[in-house]
Amino acid sequence: MRTNTTIKAGALVLLAALAAGCEPEVGSSRWCEALSQRPKTDWSLGEAADYAKHCLLESTEIGSERWCRRLADKPKGDWSADEAASYAKLCLLKGSGNDE
Image (cartoon, rainbow, N blue to C red; front, side, top):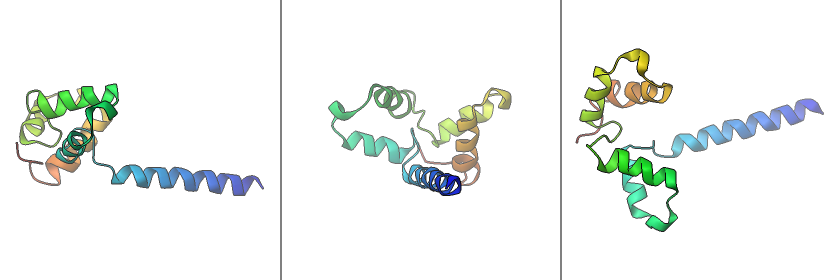
């Protein structure tokens, strides 16, 4: 009986991870575009802050050429796990990421 519960819990975690993988990454051009299409009254405070940071201010959109350069200049020891993963996926694997 405990095994079934463990299997079900594992399956739910896996499904959640897969679903999260389908969502555009916060700060990416897809994310900025998707959020800009939603009414601002539906945005959370965190979404509004992320939108301002990544989509409006200083062209720091995650994956943009400027973002990749800025992160490359930052000491690797100061990178967050999210920054390292995004850099690998958006700057190394796709060349320079999204154009500015």
